[in-house]
Length: 121
Image (tube, rainbow, N blue to C red; front, side):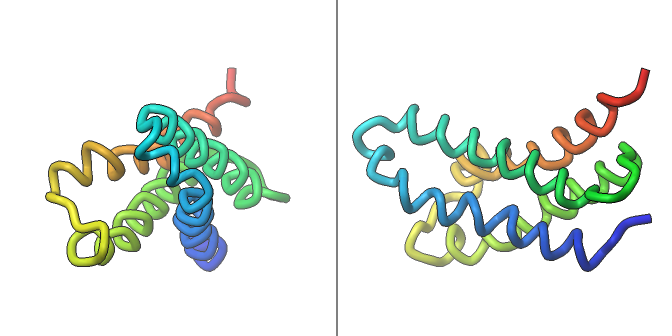
């Protein structure tokens, strides 16, 4: 059974932590864009691992729960990004947003599902 309050709070953290980290590495975007993209992808992956570990702390890990929680986190990340990238200071075309940023959030459901399957034969 999904712990909704925990899932939503950690979903907000799944957006806030990489967002805060991006301010530390944003100078790389102009000087070394591939390095910036790699750093951000790694940040999302590390955050996914840490937050899934926290979500399942003291509970049995199941792919049937990890996948919907990851999908919730994907939705939260897209919703939190929307105002900034649709109207805000970092306005982008929709296709550009998804090709540069949005697809990376698929890390949450994919990582959650496959990490939950690790313990199974």
